[in-house]
Length: 201
Image (tube, rainbow, N blue to C red; front, side):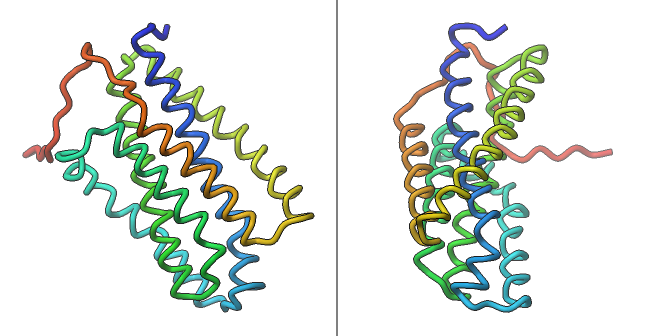
């Protein structure tokens, strides 16, 4: 059962999760066609960009050090802003270099949000409630993916790639900025370690 103290965090996670799914789905649905039709990239270049997209995933452990100077829910919202920026700018830079840079920005935002999202859920909800919260967020993500697909299909009938990327990017940045204005934390929560912990066998 979600308590009144936990509701602000749940609301925060719902909005940010929806924004994250919108950004990732928009990028994945539109990117390949955009890269070929507008940017004129070949298979090798698209493959390189796909590899670049995974680099921030390997660097997600650096979030531990970032949280030494930024509170975790702030980092989560900032990550959504970066996701929105990377997505929105994609349509404005139809070149190999431009897409490498915007993909990195988008991917850093997505991977750092995923890291903080899971951490915040486990930190602010107990062992009985957190699986239910994860389930709700996954259900939300699945439903959002379907809605995004339909939305982009309808938008493609009237708008260019540039307009679609930019529109979705602005929406995501707005969600991230909303998150920056929130303080969903409460004091009755276990203190989180902000350091690497290595265990000897």
